[in-house]
Amino acid sequence: MAGRFAPRPSRATVRGGETVVPPAAVPPTAVPRQAAAPGAVRVWVPDGPLDLGLVLGPLRRGPGDPTFRTMPDGSVWRASRTPAGPGTLRVTARGGEVRGEAWGPGAEWLLEQLPQMLGAEDDPSAFVPRHRLLAVTAHRRPGLRLVRTGLVLESLIPSVLEQKVTTLEAYQAWRLLVRKFGEPAPGPAPGRMCVMPAARTWALIPSWEWHLAGVDDKRAATVLRAVRVAARLEEAARMEPAAARERLEVLPGVGPWTSAETVQRSHGAADAVTVGDLHLPGIVGFALGGDRYADDAEMLRLLEPYAGQRHRAARLVLLSGRVPERRAPRMAPRGIERL
Image (cartoon, rainbow, N blue to C red; front, side, top):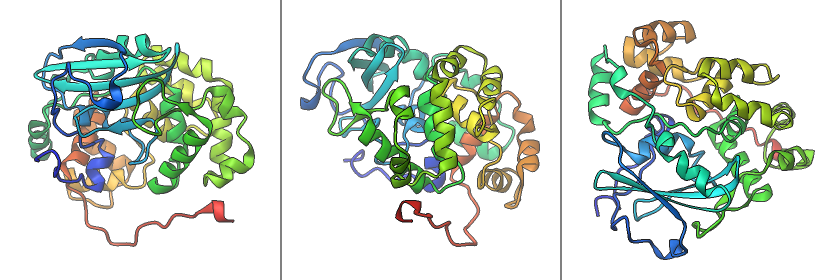
């Protein structure tokens, strides 16, 4: 019952990557009806607390994301396009161990990357809080690890779609495009889950389909430029985050905001703080310095004591829920698909 009526995250905590995952209600060896078909399995024991909702939450692009699903049995499902092909991954955590089950051509790749994806290479102990708010939040969120997917394009494209629009517009565009041009997730995935389109499929989407999804020409052109050099961009997954960001930013239409949002997920980059954001400087400034009108420079100054861990510090600020009150109406979606 407690999991069924868990409190809904606030706007700020959702932005910080919080996704509610009910406690696992069945033993890891039991599989729900929709997952009855056998898949490849891997069991991994993390070396510390692990909260699936916090770790995998940043990969969820809105409540209707066709590539991400949380289930009442405490499992998290992801559909990914891996170097080996499309794959579906089901992850559950119970009794100090994590069980991954995967289907499709990319199943083995997903299971091989499972510990890395769940933050095995992340070191939370490297973060030393210097503000009481962050110390309290870190204490309350011991299961926070930084996700690392090892996949660049699946984080870059939705980040491009989120440029300079409301989150509702970006989530809608991602949902419509993936459902229309993606392919059904392999295995017994929950209904309507899809794998995002292949690079060539993205390149062949007609201009009017971008328009109907609410994506303007500038963002659509950036995605098209990215998929034309998809192989080179995926190589960046093996680079250090700073070098990966340099490669991404060579692409016209990809700046510091988009590259940071990408490597935070693809690389688990603990220091890739997002600059150029409409709300984040004010949230960080208000939480750490009492300045709701802080700009990027002030945000970076406040985060300077956390050099090397600035992204983790910013996430903890968001997860704390301490945000300034609204003093202006919420930005209205433009709805260019109606033009």
